Length: 289
Image (cartoon, rainbow, N blue to C red):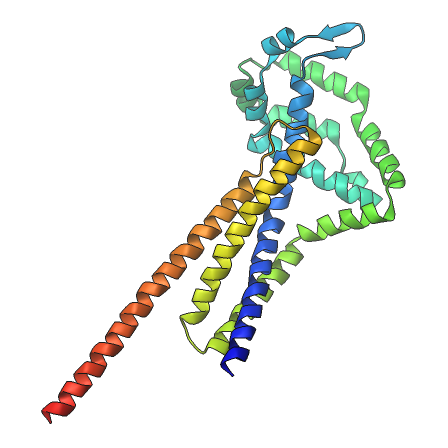
């Protein structure tokens, strides 16, 4: 019976590890796409050595006068920009699956609203004053170019050109970061822990399995971060690939799991010591009688 119990607990712990890892990925995948790929691509495009627009060539020296890599990253890492990127990442991916999401694209309105609402914080980050004239000129240029229509058309063309397999991948991504999946995973984790507690028939033993699962999950997430980072940087020629959010989650799980295991070990030792003392006391009382 004991070996059946061990196998059952082992399988449930293995399932728990997978559920914890999947939950961590669900919460961090979008951040990885934004910080690791989108922002890095934007930065590389802005800071590359030579950019040509018509007959005017923007050299590296001119770019350095306008901005610098650190300044761009600082701007891209601001909550305001991240929120805007986050919105259009969702719209872009969802529109590839369902064209009804195209109605949510309002680039001109969102860009001008972003500029007006974050004028002061943007001035601090870029080190220049944003005058009303600049905002007015930007508004005119944005409205003249009709970026929303072009953006919608680009998405529609891309949606028609992608394969059914690629659409399935996008649907999978949408489901992977959804609140519905997260709720399902959390419920499954609770059920899994409940089954472990039921098999172990102990208040502390299931916590020990949880600590082990968190420790292993943390290690797996850190290994995943290192592996993915190396692969992406080599295949996409990125100078860096940011996965800090998932790394922090992995480290947090690893530390929490180790602390939980240590605390339970201390508690168990104290419980065993107390039982031993009670046993010795009972024996001494019997002898005295």
